[in-house]
Image (cartoon, rainbow, N blue to C red; front, top):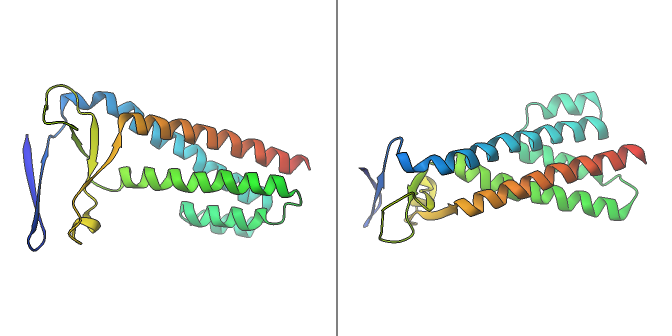
Length: 175
């Protein structure tokens, strides 16, 4: 077990215990990988939506955009969908996509420390703690970011979101 000490803001000092390639994290690897891989399908959906609802110039521009601006483009383009109920469904799906993206980004863009929710550190870890370095610099302690169950729940939400997005786009094309 290694320790990292972050000197953040007086008098706050944070010490995190961490392991490199710990044996007990295997059960986490597949779900985190699935979150990443399945999010790629959602990324692809954004390009399909923009390409279908827009023109070549906007699609070419979208290639260089991050996820959130592409979703905002989709929401703007979908304002032209005549069916009000369908527009509400589109907004619901893409707002959910943004929430899932936020969860994914926190996991993928911060250091991950596997931990235990109790003092007993035997067996596999049951939580991920992600010290958000920006927040830590503002004297905020690290927070527990996800349990394995929450990651799996987000994968389920993500899969549903991709499927629903695809169904809605087909409805628009058939109108």
